[in-house]
Length: 194
Image (cartoon, rainbow, N blue to C red):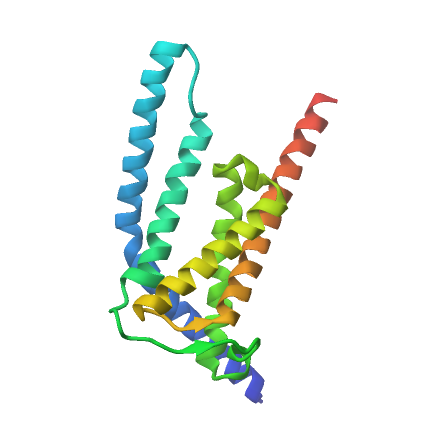
């Protein structure tokens, strides 16, 4: 016997799976931008090394900067540039309103969390101060508020408090993943030395 909750969950997962396909269409152009940025940084690093005999940016950080460029291109394409101006113009300042809506609204809640997890993972790898939680999470909040404002100002998205809250939750999850991986790497390095 299939319960109503099971049916709703199946519909929810189906909506999320369908919605994830759209950002994947922006990925090829994002990858091109990432490769361009990596190439430019490698050239700058090479020139810097010729004159200073040291690298300006570590090779690992160059890769992270390229990945961050791919992510930001895809994110901004999905949440801003792909939407026609004037297509959305509502404001919701009621916390939790999206969770009380339709199955589609609940899918948006989950998607807003998933959308910002890479932000919380990549930003600390790109920006040294963001390795601190008191820098990374506020930057995630600031980015989310800025995006919501830009969407509202151009009428390319609904301005919702829930979006900001879910984006910050996504940033926190990403940051916790970053910290966990960092701790595991330190622990494995420590165990190898023993």
